[in-house]
Image 1 (cartoon, rainbow, N blue to C red):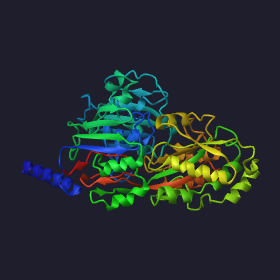
Image 2 (image 1 turned 180 degrees about the vertical axis):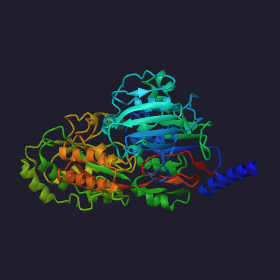
Image 3 (image 1 turned 120 degrees about the horizontal axis):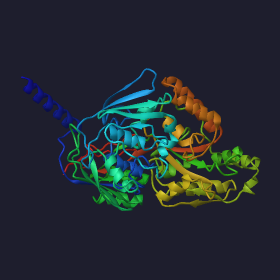
Image 4 (image 1 turned 90 degrees about the horizontal axis):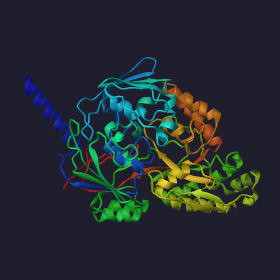
Amino acid sequence: MKKTMILLAMVFSLLMVVSAFGAEPKMGGTLVFGRGGDSVGLDPAYETDGNSFLVCDNIYEALVFYKDESTALEPGLATSWSITPDGKTYTFYLRRGVKFHDGTPFNADAVVFSIGRMMKDRNLKFTNKNWNIPPQDRPPEYWVSMEMDDTISSIEAVSDSVVVFRLKRVEAPFMANMGMDFADIISPTAFMKDPKGFLRNPVGTGPYKFVNWVRDDRIILEANKDYWGQYGGPYLDKVIFRAIPENSVRFLELKAGNIHICQFPNPADIPMAERDPNLKIPSQPGMNIGYLSFNHTKEPWKSNLKLRRAIAHAINRKAIVDNIYQGMGQVAKNPIPPTMWGYNTAIPGYKYDPELAKKLLAEAGYPEGKGLDEVTLWSMPVPRPYNPEGLKVGIAMIGDLKKIGVTARIVSYDWGTYLKRQREQPKDMDLFQLGWTGDNGDPDNFLAVLFDGLASPAIRTQWHNKAYHDLILQGKTTIDQAKRAKIYEEALQILFDDVAAISIAHSTVKWPARKNVMNFKLHPTGGVRMKNVWLDK
């Protein structure tokens, strides 16, 4: 009787999986994903860009997962967890029997190693092997910008399957943070073989494992046949991530059948995709923001508020959204999307008003732009979820600035160089385009990581405001969500009043795909999950 019940349970679970897909998944095949640029690296602790993370999403896993099409949490490499009443001790109970792609076991020591290697002062305890983690080769940007050294006191492997994190302070978004890419668990053995080369030879526990990387061309992954997942994929034999920088070329490759999914098409290509019987269009409201910011380490941007306001009122954001986003975006008022709790509905946004901009420019000491050196406006060379065409947006912006007497020119680099140089706040940078896709559904993930320059030199805007910094810290250490929402609304008002950055747009994400691509779902975090995707041949 017991065996019969177990068999029935297994059949029911399989039927549930089949029902979820709408048809029984087919095994095999190679899916080619066309994207706008190459990855910078594949070590999740040290990368910050979406092109790196979308590959990492399939190689690595974290202790907790975000559910499909949501930022709600579910068990991942940890089957469960407990939190002490004071909110400062988190105990994770790990999944047993999981192996890394190199055949070594996933265990508590691997968790301590993976997270602990990012700590400045490594207060770590292993159970079996006391790994001698090498010094950091470069700062782990997410870790630093999220003030994790001020949050985590110690990490201890209590046994092979139990890990305890002790915090220095209450951290309201801690569990949400533990599902992010930077918290992915890596193979300590693989890392220690070549710490500097690990970013090009990644080893995780995920549904796909790394095969090959041809720089600026493709990254090839193959199915992890020993994947621990109880039901479901991976179904594909291989996934190839091709870098095709030109949006129009990438879309033509999709129509020709040379790729299966087209990331970031030109908005003008969407109607054509809708008319093509061989294509379909997965869509997701963007949990994102595209913005223009100032070099807050450089005068006159650092201290001249009226100059920053003049620039804000000179940019015709609606025209940019209408003409470049073309129905796939909305003008932003806050640097968090309107669907996120904590959004400040009272903020009007910077209205387009060239006459007001000219008046403010004169009051700032630069009548008709006189006395202001040529402005360098750094524009992204690759399409991103929050900005379909950075260079076109940049050209529109310098045209707007010219109307008020400000002379500006576009500066751009390849994506890796752009990110590296921008982080260094060079003196030859005045304004820069960047953006963000939320990692975990928490406002802290936007407001702290993007704008709180007092928290860390890794914050890319390097805007310093003590009142804002204090509110962000208060938001982190407050558990009640309604109270946190009020804190973030106040912080958003300060950010708006001081013109820390100019929020441009929130985009709607639409990635056309071939009709035979089954169960591909866009995720609010911008993640690309191939585990349950299959090809209907």
